[in-house]
Length: 252
Ligand SMILES: Nc1ncnc2c1ncn2[C@@H]1O[C@H](COP(=O)(O)OP(=O)(O)OP(=O)(O)O)[C@@H](O)[C@H]1O
Image 1 (cartoon, rainbow, N blue to C red):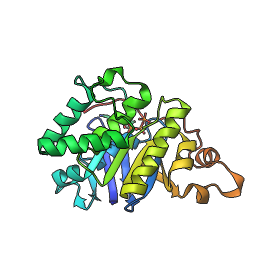
Image 2 (image 1 turned 45 degrees about the horizontal axis):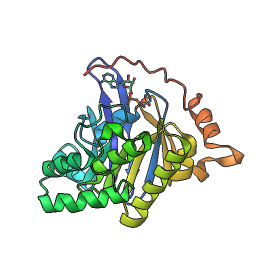
Image 3 (image 1 turned 60 degrees about the vertical axis):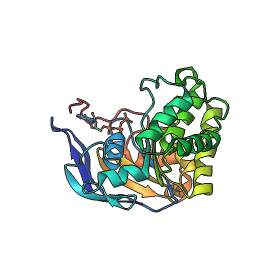
């Protein structure tokens, strides 16, 4: 579902955010992407979702070449960016209808898909609510419903549970698991929470200073009675919540 070779991104100011990353994700896997602040997670996600153009390397995402066929890639993926953006202005159902029109769905298709994704994300009954009025957990589920409207095969989630209370996090994990169980959805998610990776992911990739420094099933990485936190600390020399010492100037 995802295959990259030497994927790299150097920003104009010289920041080497992603340095020759090789990623392989199979259909139906839930893969966790771990790294500290500034390690290169969001940049990698933005490359894989066609929002940024790589400076080197090749990639196939959802069966299509990332650089040669970005529109085909976009049609087959859903992407939920980190939270914090301005909430949409229309009520929940209106936002989904607009999104459906962007994807060229008919009115009837949009109505059916909206009902389906709202049910799947346990938001039925909130059609007329304004996204700004939703709770944190509901808002995150709305963002995922939005990304699911065009029925993607591959879902990218950038830190989906950051800032949520434990109950809402556990609920979101269940919903992500059910997407895979019911629809065979492939999920690639970044997170700072190692317990999340441990509980939810079949496999984790650890990125540090723009390079993949470890990968494997959580159980296979946790050798010698170590926790995933210990593994992360051993490999990167820092805890997952520490700031990376990669330069942080952000230029276009
Ligand atoms: N537009 C940009 N211009 C220049 N440098 C950038 C830009 N975007 C990101 N960077 C730099 O690239 C590096 C990787 O950033 P990125 O946002 O991918 O990290 P991250 O692992 O997602 O961090 P976080 O967990 O804080 O979201 C950082 O050093 C960052 O400052």
